Image 1: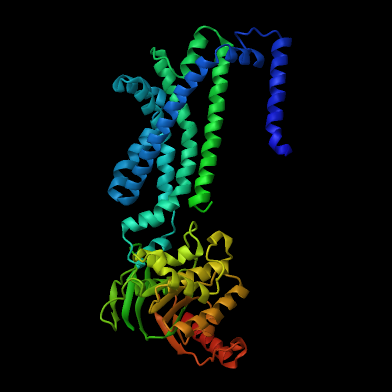
Image 2: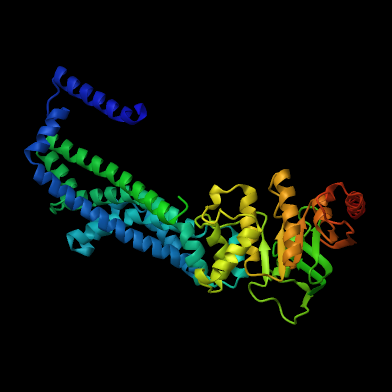
Length: 251
Length: 245
């Protein structure tokens, strides 16, 4: 019980300390606003910030879905054929090591449509953990089980469906959890790049806008929303994974 | 059932696992392949199963062709169960791979689960079972297709002494009731002497067949106290010393 409330208690103490320091030291609000000022900024325009949050989350989840489908299916293609493995793997790694901020401007110019280009950027970041985890999971059954399937005359398809895919499920789900956070990061980075180009929609643009206007409390409010969204995605996908494994997997 | 003639196997790495091994398997046999680690016992077993091909020599089946899928059961050193599947689903697997639906397979599944003493554990997942119970599931899975030949690759090596003794006794009872041919790979002289009607001793790598010894041990509750069992252990030990020299 104590362990459960400990983080909340610690958070409350930190907020209290923050507010006290800001007030006692008379830190100007454009340098560091106190927590109360941040809450005030949020309450001044909740709809504006929440609409932006919804926009960022839409990009995040669409990107996560696309990354799950692409990463999962490319990992399956790799497991099915050595040729596909040789062809795909180096490009997947290349995609992973390319810094998003460096290619985001290009993507935004090439794709054109703002929403699609944000999704493409976030997908690039979210793709690799899903792809790599699924590939690891597909290759995880011990060779003896492969021998057993071979002994009973099972072809590649049956081995994939009855052995490799179920074995990959926990790996895929943990990849999904990692990629959930990364998709949010990817969406925000892409929004920052797109936002400086004039496309106004997501929370990152609100942060840019507030920083230009020196509206620090509003900037902090947007940051807090992003952090809360990140934590919620992480916990939500973790819970989703546990439920799926309890139902279909080995828990 | 099977005549193995001068079989040799060299792996791509250059390791020669097996050289000129010849062996005759008769229907209903219980043969122990005994030898030190790395002597090619498992390689020979894999060749019999058709999981690997010999470089030299031949395997001639009395039936004229290698057994069809399901006619050979295989038990590995680890239970190698599907961790997400229940006992019954794990046992169903060989039939499932041959396209037998679950409801049709049910009588066969229930029969072998009862035979290995796991009635009441049909719905358990592998992680809920002990090492010995998992091995019982693995044996049930190998028996569900009613194989003519059961190949066992050091199946009890990772179990504790008590569990191993119990499983050895139960395996003999299963062999007596089912009557399939068993080839049992082991590196334990005691296990080979207790289980097999015929002990085939192999030399260290490259594995060759050093000697075959017939067992006159009568199986009963007191087999381990039987002087014939002790004598066989001594005979095998001496043969092994000679093979290692």
